[in-house]
Image 1: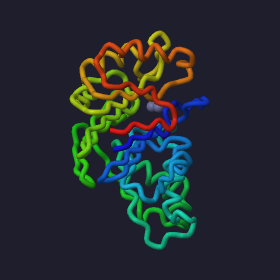
Image 2 (image 1 turned 90 degrees about the horizontal axis):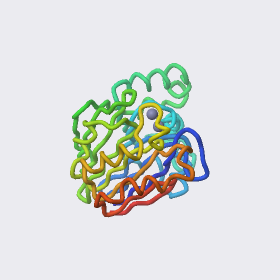
Image 3 (image 1 turned 90 degrees about the vertical axis):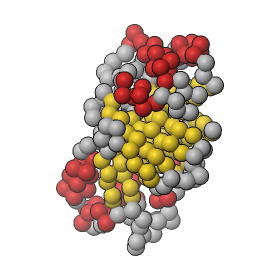
Length: 258
Ligand SMILES: [Zn+2]
Ligand SMILES: [Zn+2]
């Protein structure tokens, strides 16, 4: 199984990190979580044909996690060579409550050419997930948990090759801790150094407490704001004593194989 952090940052671009996006490739399926800004271009760089994605999961409706959603919906009307696709496969979207309404508003109202001219609604299939809900899809069990961040969802992916949990954006949340217990790979946000913590996010001290309660084998730290510039070592220092097999301070295009 391969995980590629295609976007490891925030809405503020730096040389190493921009936007949010996690690409997961297993024997059974390939998924994208969070089509944040620049993610479609990054997938192209690693030769992922986005029309072949089995599913796209959205954690929450913030632009740094979903601004490439509309371009994704539109380009699905074409094949990988840019020719109109006469019978595109379904584009399966999963996300929090409100996803269906959001797509309807954007695709049939605000950008109505997407439905009137491009015919996007013939292939878009949106599925809203709620706290604790599980589904089996393409041989992978996916479970969602609500987290404290503006209608946010975290996801757990149980595959034959291992279990991955992705926090999305969140404050330290007991529901995430329950979801992540015993996982192989925990991908968790760490937006700001502790003394500069803002908004509904997590610091390195809080992340250390989350890791000690969930005991993943591998921790992937993501969603780093520019405030971390020059201080990243503090994340490793906060977590190094906790017995993990490895810690990855993600940059754009970091690859984790298990
Ligand atoms: Zn957010
Ligand atoms: Zn964010």
